[in-house]
Length: 227
Image (tube, rainbow, N blue to C red):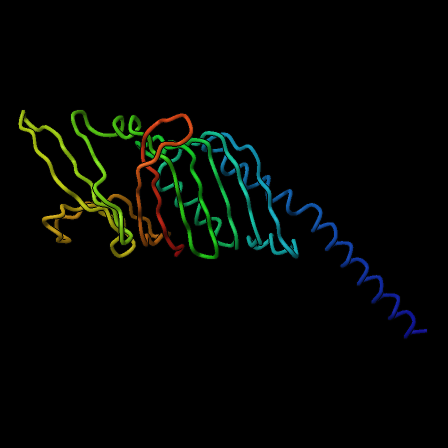
């Protein structure tokens, strides 16, 4: 009798655990997707979120096999964008996109974020008109070249009635994104464009592009690693 009773108890426990795992697999991904949607919705309109995890109980620890997210229009500053990316550190595979995003002074479109492990790749389209609107009055920037994980640009503008031009290099340095004059490649004259302790910037690129509709601009890309 004691042996049979022990077997029945063990079977009941196993059945309960199996039921809990089934329920977790059914409901936890949806709950996680809802939480992600709520977090991103602080910055704009979320269209859809899908979460995949096996077993689903690892979602309780912030881990997931994959997450896909689609958004309409977002408005976020660089620090908040880095925070969102870092919150996804437990996701093995992340694919996120937004039709448009206001990132600081830049109005971007066709924004995409890809994460594989700790590696992040962000891409976006910046139209000529959006770039012009983000620059100080009278200042123009033109792409010279993009290679070896850095971008070279030429900036022209007027100061106190005097027209001047300067070639600059935008590149990663010790995890930061910096810009400096090409003729003075010294750390002392570098300007930090982006720096966040949660991200280590590894490279940037830019190319001329014209998406469907014929609006000219630039296709921008940045690679980084989560810290």
